[in-house]
Image (tube, rainbow, N blue to C red; front, side, top):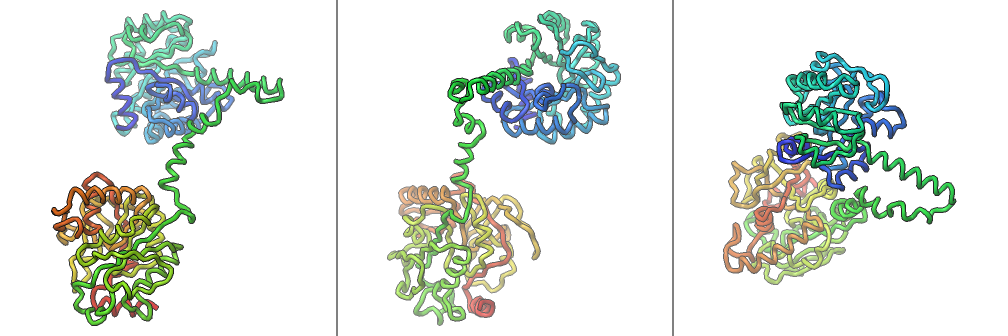
Length: 552
């Protein structure tokens, strides 16, 4: 529900809608924290914050910028005081489009001539002709993009001294033109004018009041009159002026600070209002820097299978140790990772573990590699997975730019996928495929930037004609994501012991893809980073020949 819808809902429910004035993000935040239903982006407060009269001195852009800052600071609706609409009907249409696009829930325009003067200033309070203001309301309603956005007509007849009859006539005309509510304004020091108007009103539209000059009226009395919304328009600003003036005066007088400590809030409260505490929490999950650790896990325990054309080359070594122009597949991948400043690398061994001779990596052994599968191998290095963790299958080659893209992303679970799999001919293995919620970009030349796609399904049994892409065997887990993976894995060990787990007969035979599908089914968001180059698998002799031709 957006904020315009929230305001509409407030108007449709029982009870008084209570909003208070603000002029910037922090004052709007204080309005929200003190339990009000919405914020009044007060023209008086905004102009005062610029130290200029409330008399259309500022431009619409300046008022809009202030309202937008307030809107960004809070979750409650913003009702913007837009004076007379900043000109004629053309200006009003432009104003409505801009304010609605900025997320403001409602605008209020008053039936004075431009330029207006603040309603509480004695003297000139010139009203616009009814026909002219009706035209502005029609223009405002026609300019809005959704019916949720509210246009409130402010009647100034009582302010100008034109009496109840004129006020009622204008209010009815404005409702007929489409005004969503009527703000009836009075500068009397008693609520009598408002009480008389409310009793004479037919409630063809809700009433809104601003009791600045008649503060004795209570909310209970306001509700009894049938009034729907009350605006406490400028009391925060006036309180701030008094408090700031007194504190600065005392500092100037005392020439020291300790005498005013009990009159100011501690810095910790300011930090909380700023969102500093929340920002520091978010940094733990999302802020990436060169110093932030990323550990790499390369499962390479399994014996070669379904690779008949490579069998003569793999009789005495695992696929990860296949020689590619003088360096093993694993050595080349370790060097690529080092180019991306990733040095904390763990390799899980099993089959022919004595053949691994790569320096600069940590080795973990899976003695059950022949009976278990890749998920079990990955979890052999569980104790090492205590920060952002990159898992890379040992049967692929990849370029460093792909790793750099992964490092820049902020997500708990990211798998790298390629949607060109249907062009790959003479494959000798079942592909691990994915189905994404949104369609992936197609074509040989695509732009993906940091776009991520939500994964709905992943696994070997997905039919190729409905799959979105192929999982290439590279996945990045945030610190939070890897903790979730470990926690849920241990739950599955108990729950799925000796019974089917997704595409396998037992949890011990599970793949990483099975576990990712389990996380998806639990409600976790697994996302895909799309590529269509920068990697290759080595499963056939043709793959091997190509790898030897392309790498130095």
